[in-house]
Image (cartoon, rainbow, N blue to C red):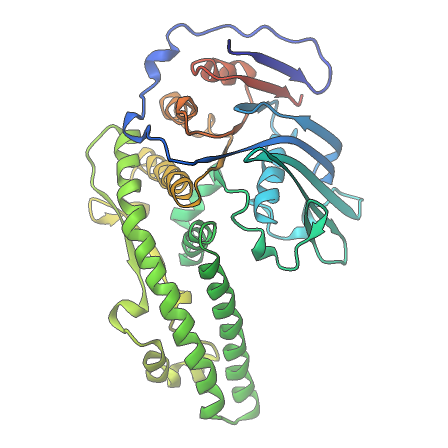
Length: 403
């Protein structure tokens, strides 16, 4: 039997939440995605403890294995809990990349402690930061020497109003999305990307040195060009291969969410599409690079173009089309990571009720009825609205009222 727990953090009297008898008609099942992946590993976040993280002094949670909802007024810390869970997977905040700003005001450190059950084994992950010191990530008491070694161990996908940046911001935001998805299932790609960015920084520093000292050494620059060309080609080829798999998944998700037949597409834009050899391209644009004092061509300038009916969705897509596009993008990310990692990712839905219509939200939450779906975390301002939706699926859940 499905069980329900309503937990009020401030110990206020529980409020009885009524059913909406007609809510089920809003649900549109995703039958085309209800396949089971052989040997799929299930991962559950069982416990979370926060100390001096954002607005929390000290707080602990024990979670349900399927659906967990954080409800309460704006500014109470619902999104901060989801961000802490994201932090455990990626070693950084989704909403504020400046690590020290995630420490509670007037404190000098934070600690995030998560206990997971992964493949019937307990895994304890701790992320901590003290002002003026380097952030530390521990797995079962052992400190990671490199944060990149942790990426992909706890696969996770977040859907948030902040995702609109993927459409309205520049190419750097979309590249980071691209790299994040691939890196969670391909360590070699991540290592090549780190190496490329390090060499790129060194090449840019050398170009600045040449300009400042009115000198130039072609042989010294050539060393960096060769390395950028090698790593860049590998990254370029893997991005191409990824999009060949990812794009059809994305298109299917968009069709299911939008309930229409609009043609959408993801178009990979790269300098290497027209130039197979990055070293030759760098030599060709060398006069420009010397004048600019930075590297103007390469895979660090790649972009992922979002199209609807062959036009940029930023300019020609309605608000509803943009929302559907972003949800489809994130659910395709969920599908891809699940297929590649053979692990059911954790899914975070931040404040989606206020930004999406009930039909879209219900369709997303309906996913948890699939037997190969993992754990879901939701934040919302209205307890009743949240429970009305989660009751529509046949899974256990908990509601944490942070009011």
